[in-house]
Length: 224
Image (cartoon, rainbow, N blue to C red; front, side, top):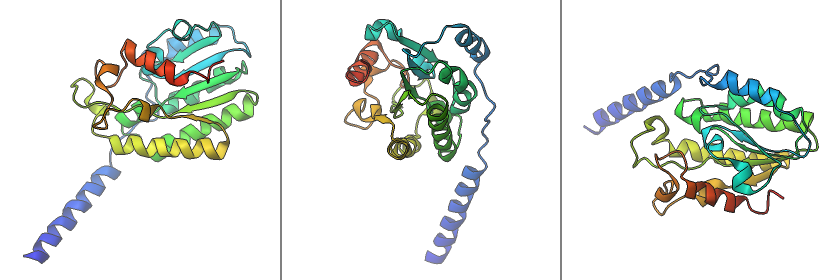
């Protein structure tokens, strides 16, 4: 009986590994608003005084100028964006040689089953592109926020906490090896159960006003 159980367990593990390896993902995906937003960003003036917030809908979801009380802050978030999308539009970010870039990207990679090793490679490519083409820009990598599966709206993002943690650990490694700044948002938004604290989110993924206020508090000291 033990031998039979061992064989069944082995076959089950093999099936799970095969399914994991065969999960489909698409590097060419771009959200519906992507082309329009990139065209707008290309139209806007650049300045080497700019403080750029670069990312997806979590970044796009607030007026950073007003939140931080700083007219130099520019929002370059695109709802639904992935790391491949940021790489595709990184030239526009770098060309103005901004003073600072705050990057938060990758949670949609998680939802779209992009392997975390690929996401981390893209993070590294983004950092190195900025270092090469905007050498005076200070780069701030922000760890992915936790999610809260108690909500029922963004199921593709839920139950992938280990993947988020692996990406965050790699972000810390990249920051250290590339000598750029690391801001650990993840630990600052956790509740006692290891989930995105309820008061900071309205759907288990995106942030409430209180969530953005807390984010601004975490960033205090990095902006000026």
